[in-house]
Image 1 (cartoon, rainbow, N blue to C red):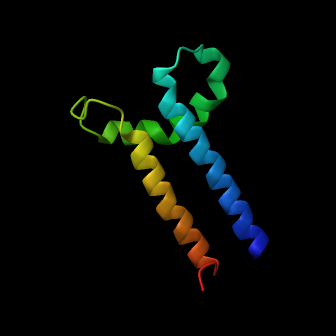
Image 2: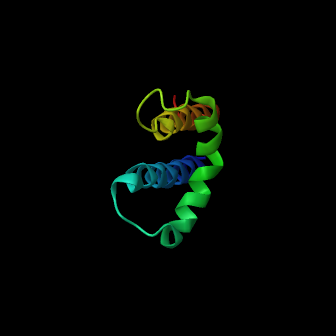
Length: 86
């Protein structure tokens, strides 16, 4: 069971890293084609969140922050259900 919890933490950690990289990309000159995999993975979950946010009311893209918050809750719920928090 500990290995499963470890694996879940690793997978979520990698996903958090991809989201943080994606959040920084608008501030760094880059070629979108070189980072196509990051865009494809993160767009799967960021686009629905962006569609639910009010357009341009915040002045910045809040979807990465919301996504990290939601996934942190999901991660903790999964670990709790697996018996990780005693």
